[in-house]
Image 1 (cartoon, rainbow, N blue to C red):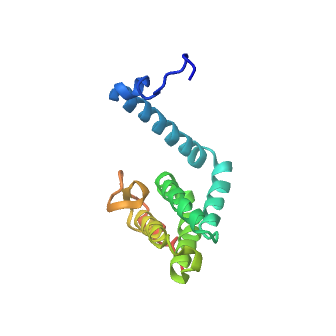
Image 2 (cartoon, rainbow, N blue to C red):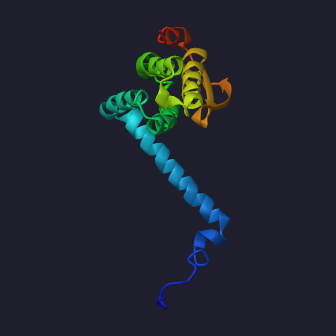
Image 3 (spheres, rainbow, N blue to C red):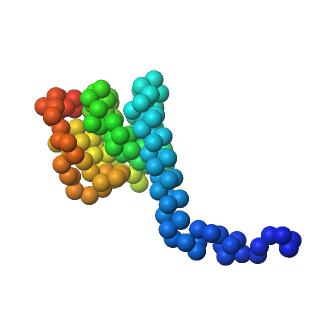
Length: 161
């Protein structure tokens, strides 16, 4: 090949030789993603409402791949918005109902992603009714939410069948 380009780019990658720099770059990328999520879902209400409606609608889209990807978005949405009272209505009624319908009626297209949707139902229930936070993407045992939930009684009324 050309003499200007290295044959093996991995040998000349500064991140491969220094794990501290690689960790710092990864932390910066994760914080940037987290800040973007907070901006879209918490700081900008005009964008947040439309984005949440689209995510809730995609949860019922008749395609297993779309449903699986949407469940990951639902977990991120719950991480950022479940503690905000103005979002409990849409999360507790619309998202919860759509997820439960998918599990109960078990459409043919949802053959490979039932457990992902059940994890979303569990995440919604734990966050809105019990006031517990789960590990990222709805994994692990429930833990008491930081700061506690001072309106648990009000949140519990937002989940209806």
